[in-house]
Amino acid sequence: MNWDPISLREEAKKEIYKLIDKHLKKLPKNKDGSINDLSEGFEDNDVDALRHAYVSGVFTQEYGEITSSIFGRLNEVFPGGGVSSSNSENAINMDLWNNAVGRKYGKESKSRKKLFQHLINAMKEGELIIDINTDSRKYTEAGEIKSNIKGFVIVLNEDKKGKNSMFYDLSNKKIMNRDEFVSLIKNGSYPNYELRIVNRLEIPVAKKDKSLVNNLG
Image (cartoon, rainbow, N blue to C red; front, side, top):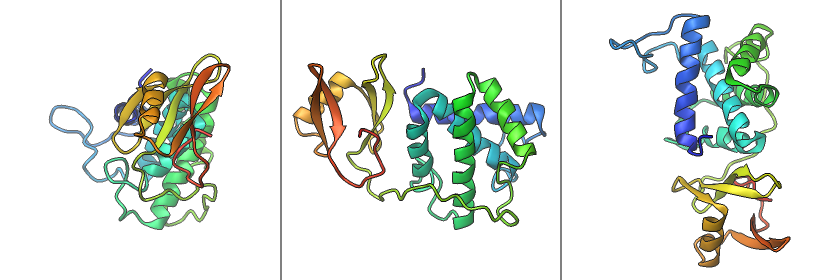
């Protein structure tokens, strides 16, 4: 399992480009044969739609649907963790829509190969938005993301008993296990979180707020 979301995103992006190049259409390449995703033909089209859906589906397989949704929404807000704020409203809507399709099939797929097959079929059936100028469908399920994510943490994994076990600090991109996060909450490093005793185990939870940037309950 890949605990690093940034590494996983790049891994999934390279995978989907190779799959598109092999099974759908040829993509521009660099002299060394690698996909040149800096060239034209990668934005606001079928390649863009499949990339967003595939990465979102992979995140769903690895981290779960809620965490995948959070990363997808953050991807539209923060440069480096996502697309620049110059993205048009229609382009953001397209990305969020396709992310949701990816999560749907990520839940249904036990492998990335099957995920890709589902997404190709979804595109053929018109489930994906591949043209922001002619497709008027609107994604209405995305909550607003705060512009300041400092100190916010999300869950990457649960243990076999359903307790949160791996965590990710969104602002400093730090991966923590439960013991590490508990210790940092105790020393005051994460004032937005507190500990709850469940079956004699200290469980990190978010303090009550209206934030949509965490999934710690």
